[in-house]
Image (cartoon, rainbow, N blue to C red; front, side, top):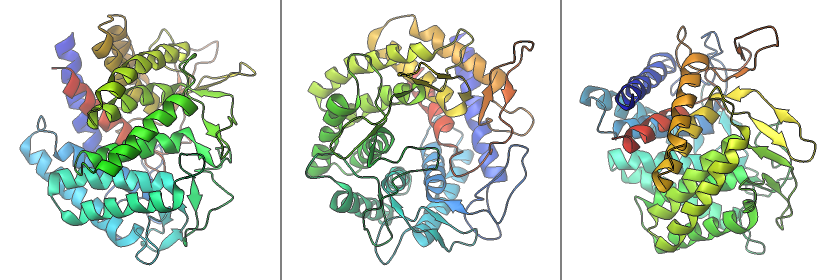
Length: 404
């Protein structure tokens, strides 16, 4: 069974990358399309998001550097990573004030010029991964510049942590949100998670002592301010001095952070924090089980105050959950986690992988009482500002690295 699972993940990794290679390259206006809907319709005039471009850069860079893939595919993936890098460098990076635009038009002109720290973080993540496969010093230098800008403008010297959003000229904005679905608060778990993810990847190619100190400080912020160490759940939104502003639990972020934060401690080789985060990681994995269903799916969110449960299932949650529970098995040896990975994969194959149009659907709603099958969220994009190859590509690579 283990062999079959590994083989299936290997096939799926190539299938995901093939979709993005064959369907998303914008041969007319450059870079990659900004939107493809659920049915596969391309919107060539749709704006292009900086986060999507950076995640494409990361995904093809990681695939090009993954030695289990055939050499001929790795060569093609490296060329696609180079395409994403050149587009990011040419169109998204603000040559006047520095930083990364939130979005550009389909032809590459600035659209939303706000400097969202979440967006800069993903650019660092992609650039540092690209540097691993290219040794292109420009990629490393651009990542370092973005890191310095985050520290210059976003770091909160008074209360610690990082502020969310700035104008083109780096003035702090009142609207902090990543999207209109988010709460409007100056600090968030989500942005801090992806800052530490980006900083850790940058450290892996540039082991700077001050960068290490920043990663260590972020780990401590997660332990003392963001994570509820009693429940194992992450708090999501905060005011400037870290007063909690939300009662919602995000099961996907709990399980994603459970392995990413441990990985950050491992990358900086801080044995004290590694051991601490092994314990906390298991606490978070256990907390995630609150949202786990017997069919291998994870509910989306829960409001702790009202008890309301958001029961739709999203693609990225399943991807991160497989890695998170595999990580929990690896650090604990507790056998109960391994079957969970298999259950999530079976749910993913049956409900999330789009056998007709390729890639994974955004998500599904649970069946009505009189039905057996989940209902696909057909109004959500297959490719879009937030729908990307990052979560499921990374999940496949992480599983193959961990499952030998």
